[in-house]
Picture 1 (cartoon, rainbow, N blue to C red):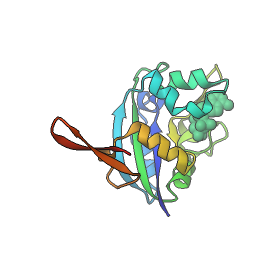
Picture 2 (tube, protein in one colour; picture 1 turned 90 degrees about the vertical axis):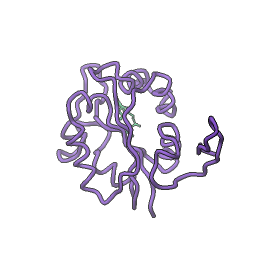
Picture 3 (cartoon, helix red, strand yellow; picture 1 turned 135 degrees about the vertical axis):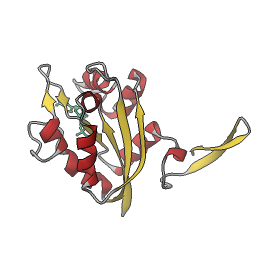
Picture 4 (cartoon, rainbow, N blue to C red; picture 1 turned 90 degrees about the horizontal axis):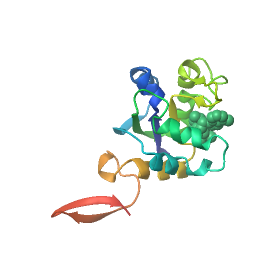
Length: 167
Ligand code: ADP
C-alpha cells in the first residue's frame, strides 16, 4: 500500500554539505518526492517533533540538535516521500539509529557519528510508523505543500482566498 514518510536532513547534514549525497541515496528507492521545504526549527517545534521521547535522558540534546544549536547552519530540510512501504524503504536507506551500528552503505553508517557527549548525530530523521508520519507531516507541512492528498483537510478563508488546512 502507498504511504508517506517524513524525512528530515538534520543540521549536521546541512552543515557538512551532505544534502546531495543524502538525496541520491533516497533517489535509489522507487519513492516519489511529494513535498520539500527548508526550515529552521524553533526549540518549541523541535520539542513537539520529539514529544514521544520527552522522558528519555537525551531529550534535551536532541531538541538542541534539531534546533541547530550544535551546528554552523541552524537549518534543516523536511521532505515527504510517498510510495509502497515508504517508511520501511526510507528507514533501510537511513540505517539504524546508532550510526556505529548502521551498515556502511546507509546514510547514518556512512555519515553519522557519536559525539563525545554521547549524542547520536545521525544526519537524518525518518518516521517510524504511519501514525508518527501523520503527526510529523502535519507538524511540518500544510496540505497545499504536498503533491498528493494524504489526510483530511478543510477550507478556510484567508484575506478573501480559500486555503486548505488539516481538518
Ligand atoms: P530514530 O531517529 O532512529 O527513529 P529515535 O526516534 O528513537 O530514533 O531517536 C530520535 C533521535 O535521538 C535519533 O535519531 C538520535 O539522533 C537520538 N538518539 C536516539 N537514541 C539515542 C541514544 N541512546 N543516545 C543518544 N542519542 C540518541
